[in-house]
Image 1 (cartoon, rainbow, N blue to C red):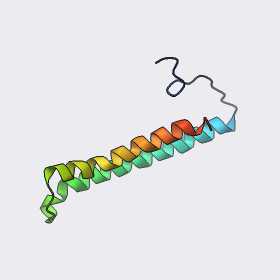
Image 2 (cartoon, one colour):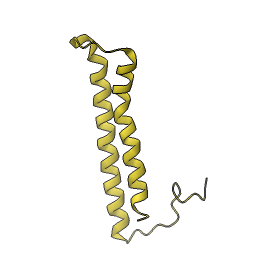
Image 3 (cartoon, helix red, strand yellow):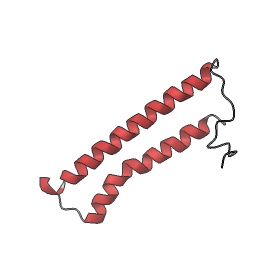
Length: 83
């Protein structure tokens, strides 16, 4: 996997503003995704005590939904450079 262009940094141009812009956008997107995942996980645990009637599977899916979207954002931002 070391030569895989989707996971390996093949070139580094610290003077190129486009590389820094991509890094900033990706970092912000992943940070917001993590914060959303963390908040949803904290809220999902408390839903039954707040009176909501969900099955265990529904609670697992509700807690995992932000994680699935986080993977989607990371995938899209990784491939944005190749366009």
